[in-house]
Structures are given as structure tokens and as C-alpha cells.
Image (tube, rainbow, N blue to C red; front, side):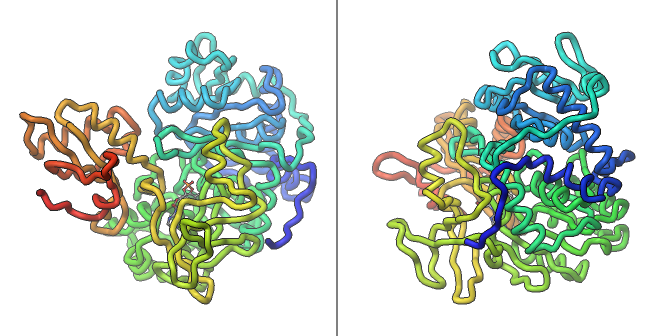
Length: 521
Ligand code: 3UK
């Protein structure tokens, strides 16, 4: 492991924010969002006021604070303010249905929630079942029993000393979906922010304070939080926020107007951009020196079409929330289509078989990662933690091969989890939902490639007696899923089967369903 020193006591918010004022970067633009922009000095003022306001509400070191908002500046202020007072912010996925938000609030025992006014009713509705939640702060118009974000900030002082946190204290939790669908709180420490910045942003990408970052992945995903906060703010660079849905025209217009130098996308977004018939005529992407991709496998065809369109590579890298961010990546100027690249210096990898024996070059094994930025575990899930955090090593759940030159190739997941558009979909959750429909006797869900080789959920359904397959039933079942769990989890295709392939013990053999049309016997 390459030695990257991090101090014994450190506060991530001081590193990401206060350091820039101390070192003369206070007038750099930190944030751009629609018509507003904030320098680092202005961000610090907002963060200090909010930090004081949160303390006045009773938030203490180690308390969790839930943040539920699209990517607006207040979400960044919230993340930094909590870290600065030693509290632990959790930016929850706004696309999740209320039950899942409730789960995260329960699981984390958040004391305060800060919600955008479009989402505040969700939290308000959950309050009676949340004994630990003392305050709901609303970004926008606050209702009865709620606190207004603006009032809280305006009524608080601008001086705030950072909490004297250890490098090993929790800085932030990131919730990521598990195999059962229930999200797991992944505990990131203050030192991880520094370690990762040094290893990847500074040494590997060569990020500078003149860079301008635009991320398709939102702040509530690990990938987005890394791009828009830890990497960009680490450098004293500019983060361009996109509160809107990541539609291809919205993204293309924003790149053209705001001229980012680093664009971090997911393969599904690159592919959607390439579908715009006027992409290269109507939009100008020449400001971008780095097009990054992560979150799901990048099909070589998307890579090639991007190169034809813009004359530039997409730099694919693989990361995971447990390991903070990207750990294997192509290099700008040395991109191998279809490969994930090489280890980011500072990270170590092992590829092992089921008995934990090292596999040889070219052979497929389970990927384990070691680094100074891995999470300390899953909150309140000891057994799950023990299966993933193996001493110094993290079991990523990914299958990879590595050639003699150290080039890694992704070979799929070791479990049944689906990565679609860079977002997790747990087959078990979709199956359980579909099974609630009266027509469904049983079903199996797997990831299947669409015509562009991007993986999307597909369901195999066995119907109850009296029901027969039809286009109308397919649409009904898809809608049934969409309204019950996060809409992006719905099956894009449904295939009807007389029975499902199963093991002797009755477990669905999803590997038999994967990528294949099962013979209807
Ligand atoms: C899959 C990829 C193929 C892989 C993430 C960058 O995606 C991120 O974190 P998650 O915890 O998911 C991790 C899993 O997603 N994956 C990610 N990138 C790729 N598969 N090619 C890729 N390039 O299964 C991995 O284990 O949601 C990505 C930075 C921070 C992140 N948190």
C-alpha cells in the first residue's frame, strides 16, 4: 500500500473548505447553480451559519442529520456544516419511495432532517413513527412544527470553529442498496476524504483549482458526492450543480453554457446524449478535458461513438461506495475500450477464487481492494460487515480478470445485484413487488442487455391459472412495480414462462435466466 499520510486529528470540512480561505483561494468560485454562484468565502459563511444553527437545534458531535434534497447549494452547505461540527450528514436518495426514506431515518436515528420543500411532506408524514427525529428543517416554505432553513441560517453567527474530530471519526454516511433491497449505511471517516483526494484527484487525475466539475450522478450517490464535493472542493475548484432530472438535453445545454472541464457521467447518460440527433451541431463540449464514466459497465460501442462524435475518449473507472470512490481506472491518454484500466496508485487488489486462493493472469476471480479510504463498516449490520470488510480488505462483489500488464477487465457481479444507469436494483425487491400482483404466481428478475448493451432489469413471470400473457398485462405489471418501489426499478421487459428454473432446494437459478431466453418447456 502506497503511504499517504493523514493526520491523527482532522476535519474533512476544514480540508474541503477552510483550507482554501487560509491558503488564498477564498475568492475562487466554489458553486454554480442556475443563476446563483458562491465563492469559497461565501460557502464558508453559509456553512458556519448553518453549523451554528444546527448546534442551536441540539445537534451534537456524532449525531446523524438526514439531508433530502435535489442538488442545490443548500445540500452542499448541509453536508459541510454537519461535518464541520462533527455531526454525520446523510444525503438520502430523493428518488426512493417514502417507506425507504423512513427506513433510512429509522436506521440512522437521525436527530434532524433537512428537506427541500418538495420533499418535506414525505418526512413530515413519517414523523409520528420517528422518536429520534426532533426537528424538520425545510429548504423553502416551512409549515407548522417545522423550521425554515433561511431563518435558521440568517439567525445564526458567522464564526464557527471546526469540531476537533479524529481522522477515524465518521464524517458522513452513504446509503447504498443491499441484496434484499434495504439500504446499508456505509460509514466514511474524515481521513478517507483526504486520503482519497491525494491518491486519485491530485496524483491520478491532476485536478487543479481551475477545473470546473459537472456530475450527472447526484450528491446523494457516492459517485456524485465524490465528484461534486470531495474531488472538486478538495482542489478549490468549481462545482456546477444540476438540480434537474438528468435528461440528455438538460445535460448538453448545461455543458455548453457552463463549460465544465471535467464531466462525470454514467454510461446510460453518455448513451442518451449520443441519441440526440443534433448533438455535435447544437452543443459545444470542447471545454471538457476529461469525460469520466463509472457506476456501471461502459459498452465499447458507446465509447467508440463518443470518440467519433467528439474526438475524445471516455475514461472509464470502477468504484464502489465501500471503497469511497474509483479505485481501478483507465488513464486519460491510455484508454482501452472494454477494460476498466489499472489500479489507481495507492490501492492494492487481490483476485481470488471461492477458496480465497489467488487466481492467475487472465483468470476470473473475486476482487478484493485495500486502501486508506475504505469505509469502517455498515451501520448496525455486523454480519453483513463481516462478509464485506475482511480485515484490511474489502470484498467488492465484482468479478474481474487481470492480465500480465495489470489491466483489469470487468466480468460481472458475483451476486445477483443489477447495476442499471449506475443505480442498484435488487432482484429480490422487484420480485417481491411483482408477486403482489394477482396475476403473478412466481417470478425471477435479472439484468439483461438492451440494444446498446446497457443492463436493465428484466422479469420472467409465471402466471396464475386463468391469466394469459398480453401486451396489456405487461404494461400493467410494469406500472404495478413503478408505483410501489422506486420507478427506475421496473422491469423493462417481461417474459412469460410456464415455470422457473430452480435448485433442488427451491431457490430461483437466476444465472439460468440471465441474458437468456429460457426455452418454454
Ligand atoms: C459497479 C461498475 C462496471 C460494480 C461508485 C464510482 O458505483 C459506485 O458505487 P456503488 O456502491 O456501486 C459499486 C458497483 O457498481 N460498477 C461501478 N463502476 C463500474 N461496473 N464498470 C464500472 N466502471 O459492480 C461496483 O462494485 O453504487 C462508482 C465512484 C463512487 C461510487 N460509489
